[in-house]
Image (tube, rainbow over the protein chains, first blue to last red):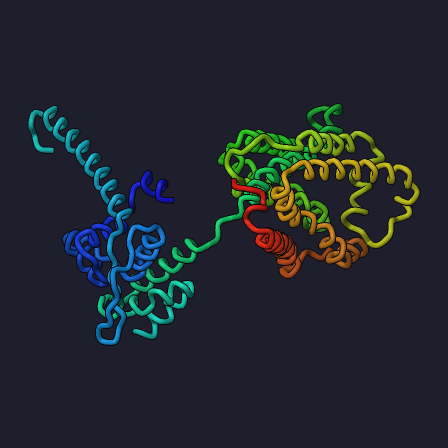
Length: 119
Length: 326
């Protein structure tokens, strides 16, 4: 499953959740806030999407529970990236970087063909 | 709002709720974005979580699906050719275009099954199923029994369609091709001999009213010979089934169950209906909703029951003895 995952491009919510957890262990609502911040408010995950993604990522071994706290009599569980998750995020980041570089080169070439006019 | 959230969370599998319900309720309370989009998100995610938890189909079932698709298509092609071959000497105008089309479509599906071309197999089997329904449907309003007579063919076409979708990719060469090819040849040959025509056998096979009519009794020797040929064809199919590896053999029974169950279903469940229509041509009854539901649900239940029993049997034997991997 991991091999198949590494071949297929990651869906954006997955990539963003892993990115949020790459900085430090976070609980669910903190992941929502961080994803919103790192996308400039464009993506604000909802609870269903977030927890179905967390459940799947745990099953695939990309994240794991870091610790649990009780805050105002409610369970707060922190998640962290695993070594496998780190490799998977690094692979996806490299793939995106490569694609972005190709797009960038073609845009430069296009602008050059058009005599330096902005695209 | 919390009550609504709790109700929506009941859509999730119980193990998921045990793990995340409390957290999700806290996030939903903190998030402060109620409304249809939130409800949609929770319902959609519940569906995805449930889909992700569906057990993978047993490898034996998928390998048997590949065999069922191939054998089923071969027999459907034989059944279609049986209706075409006798009319070929009389010229093209004697042929029913629908029968010719059925034979052509099943030939294409057979080639697709042999080569493992899934998309072509799916498209062909969909067309084949539509043609198997369309052929008797032309006479449905006058003679509803035509649909019942042909129902095993319709169900076989449906099984071929579904089996093609579930079939394991690739795999070894098909086993038992020669016996099932011989059985198909016998079925086609039945049409060449007038006293073995299917119309004489179908009342006994499908529309059984408990006893043979005087007409059939008068032709008892020919009738018996026809039954013998059918028994020989069935024997060859069984031989082909026994040539399969044990796991495939077990699961082939699950794929065959929806077709096999149509015979007792039609014979026992629709006997009074057929008797009424035969005796009252002026007031032909059509199938009602309950009867249609039975025609669809009984074969489905047969498949699920046999598949469940096979799964239980294989679990009891342990993974090492269930026929290996796909």
